[in-house]
Length: 421
Image (cartoon, rainbow, N blue to C red; front, side, top):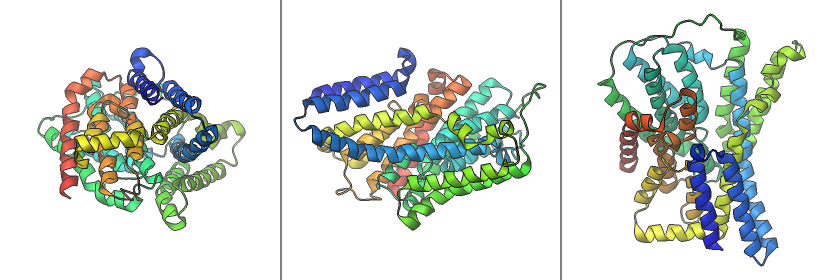
């Protein structure tokens, strides 16, 4: 049975990695992998009641992550519908290539910590289209945005889904992860930027003004209100957890309720047709639901490997073979460039238990750093990379040639700084 489970899991993994080659959406593959693995376990078990209990236990944890992502994505969509991000992006005016690269990268780094790396990457690439005319230069900036978004995501419990998973799972606390990973994450971005400062030169050519722009301008009061309330409530989520000790998804649902109510109040006097694009109901229809289902499928599959002790046995084998935990986590980070970091972190959470490695143990902090920044080394290694790949039509080998080495330099530099700290 164990052999069958591992075989199904590996086949599912390969199909997810080769999504664009086999032309099967990774969400479908993840759901099939999760359900088939649990089915095999149920069929081979003599105690079906125990299997159902174990499934219910894992589903509770998965549901927490799913509700958290659902709430966070909806809030971000509401802010974007009100053109709230323009409050910041409209203030970028420089045309100097090096200065613009630093501004874009650092802004992405901090914004990613508040929102998440996927959303931030999408917002920043949309911004780049408004300020850079040359396609090749814009792709290069987009590649650096991937590095910055992933680096910014690792030091905040809201910034990367893997960090969120560790936070919700109790492996890390919000304050400690920000304190321990801020400097290593910043170093992983600063090192590539310093290198590029000696390579890039000349001015940026802005795109020609479009004559067919028909985007409706949102009144300043509505835009500023939604930006302030939305960002403020996202920042309040870790505070809410600290005060109430309730799970993070309760905080994000509170935040969604407040932002939803504010959006209703702002447009209360408008008719139904005018209100629709600014409602939470419309925002819910625009969020990336397939990503949430992907995480559910992957975490279901990982759950089977955990309850059958496959992951704990793998951890024991790695400890016996490699020995050094830091080296193991560093290798996991390298692997996250090829394999999606969500299942990697989920597997690691199953390999190492909280009884042996309690909350805020160094292994969890280093895992958050490595899994988050390691994905930048290949464009398929992170959700932000995949999104930018589609938006700017960046090829795998173009990214490998121009960005991957920069990401590797940053990854190693940040890891060294963390270990020294």
